[in-house]
Amino acid sequence: MLAYTVLVLLVAVERLAELVVARRNAAWSLARGGTEYGRGHYPPMVLLHTGLLAGCLLEVWSGQRPFLPWLGWPMLAAVLGAQALRWWCIATLGPRWNTRVIVVPGLPLVGGGPYRWLAHPNYVAVVVEGFALPLVHTAWVTAFCFTVLNAWLLAVRVRCEERALTLCRVAA
Image (tube, rainbow, N blue to C red; front, side, top):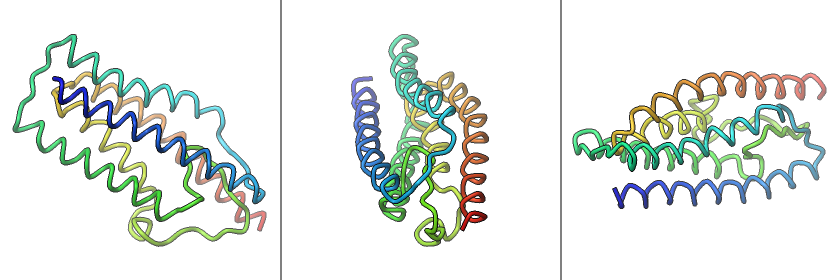
């Protein structure tokens, strides 16, 4: 359980690094006339993602969840793959990547990197991480709860992003 705790803490540090990048990128976007959309769903999103990390630790430690190699190792590989995909998205979008929905008018859509194949590859990473991280150590309740709540939140988020991009295209 100690190694799993370290893994979850490393993911938390990674999330903090994302927030540093996002804050810098938000300033870049806003300085170029960017507009933020969907502020209302951002606090629940932060709460849900914080709850994922806390739930992983709480369920494993309080429920004495075992590490099952046949499940844990593939889920760890999925978590690492999700992290790689997330940072590929961040690198591809550059200063346009953000944890918030901020659109800078006049900028074309990005069509490189993982965006060649997927409209929202970062959310693929979020979905995979959301079920895989808890299942590394059989925290199935956390995996289930996060997945269900995240499905609802992502539906709201994707609609928000699509609407924001459409409004910017119409305005341009």
